[in-house]
Every structure is written in structure tokens, then in C-alpha cells.
Image (cartoon, rainbow, N blue to C red; front, side, top):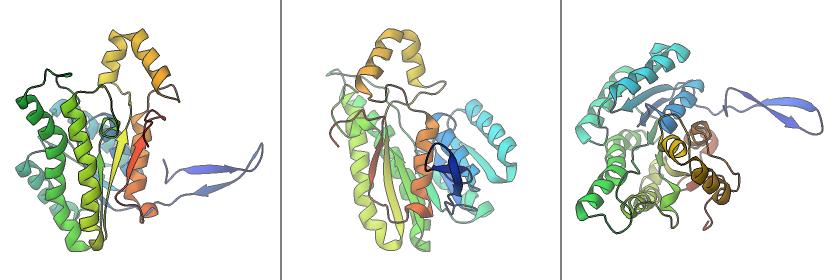
Amino acid sequence: MLGGAQSGVCTGPSLERFVTVDLGLVGRVVLIAGSSRGIGRATARAFLAEGCRTAITGRDRASLDAARVELASDFGPESVMAFQGDHGRPDVITRTLDRMRERWGDLDCLVANIGSGRGKGGLDAKEADWMGAFDVNLWSGVRVVSAAVGQMLENHHGSITIVGSIVGVEGSTAPLAYSSAKAALMNYSKNLSRLVGPYNVRVNCVAPGNIFFPGGSWEKHLAERTAEVTAYIKAEVPLQRFGRPEEIADLIVFLSSDRASFITGAGIVADGGQTRSI
């Protein structure tokens, strides 16, 4: 972890000393919308390791319960809350925020990690496909932020991190509706940061590349088309590997911390060097 763990400062062939990075997150209240697996689950673990009180969410009861049990076992049940449901719906997110506030107080950090890359590619997508893609990949995130930002504006304090994708940064072979929605999400993040900045609320967007985790889409693709996917990663990603959820989680936690107090309106790509336009 970035905080809580020690990182070596090497001045030669031997390790001379250790330094500890304090992210200033102990006791903070965190909500991660979309956190029963993958990047969201790793982000929950990272916040908990920093001493945060962390709420996780997910639509699938089984995976959410598994995440809650694991995290509560490692960090204590008093530090974890789990809420099942579609947190792209205003009534669901409002109910979650109310319950968090009753138990822990006001929200400090929000991570909006809602989206799906599934959809028709090429020119086959119809208007309904576009509407569905925008609802999941843009509007769900907007609804979560809109429901939560009021507490932060009242308190003149807070950090919002929106999880996008590199397909919103430059051209790709991803479905048009999906990539367009992610581009809109990044623009939303940038412009929102200007509106809430005077209230000491920060907004940043993280754009991950190809992230591999059990149950994720890349696991399926790799199993079905091993040679093709392997060749693609080696050709397109300079680091020649998939990213890990923990690598994105550490970035999100840093952006949410006091160490990143002058960073807002940023769109940060974490993709092993894959994108070429920025």
C-alpha cells in the first residue's frame, strides 16, 4: 500500500533507510459504488488498509457477501458496510448514504466505479443500445455523484474519484456507445471539478487500461483466444502485460488523500503505456 507500508529509498546497491508515507486517511468515511469484485474490491481493501471506514456495493448478492466477509475478517466488521442493489438508481444510492451517515457520519471520499463494456460493436448498435450504454456508463455515475456531493459541499471538504476507461481518451475498437459514454464521463468529471472546487471538493477521473482479475472479461477472452489476446497485449501495451486491480486502487486512494490535495480536474491514465494521444 502507498500508506501504512514502508517503501525503501535506495542510494546504491543496498537499502539505506526507510520512509513512511502518511496519506492522512485514518478515520475517513468512504463509499465505493461498484466494489464487489475487480478494481472496486481492490480499492475497498486499499482504503481499509489506510484506516478508513468503507462501504462497498454491488448488484450480485453472492459476490458482495463474499467481499464483505473477506474484508470484515481482515479489517474488522466495524470498518465495513455492504449494500446490495443497483447504485445507479437515485433511491438506492440515497438510502445507502443515509444509512452510512447514521452510523459513521458524513462522507469524505466517493469512488464512482459503475459501468459495463458489454454492447454491440460496429454499426449494428441501435438507439436503444446507445441509450443503455449511456445509462450504465455515464448516467449511473452522474446519479451517484449528484446524490453524494451535497454532503461535501455543506462541509467544504471531500474527494470524488470517477473510474472511466482509456476508450474515452482516444480511438479504439470498443463499441461506439461505450467509448462515447466514457468520453462524456471524463468531460463531466473535468467540468464538475470547476464547479465544486471553491467548496474545497476535488474531482478526478482515472482511466484504466486492460485490467485482469478473476471473473473479469479479460479472463474470459484470454481463455477463449489465448494466442490472439497475448499477441494483442504484447503489441499494444509497452509494459507487455495486463494491469492489476491493486495498481488502479493505489492510484484512487492516493488521489483521495491529503497528499493529493492540489490535484483536481485531472484525468489520469493507468494503462501500461497503451494510449498514444496524451
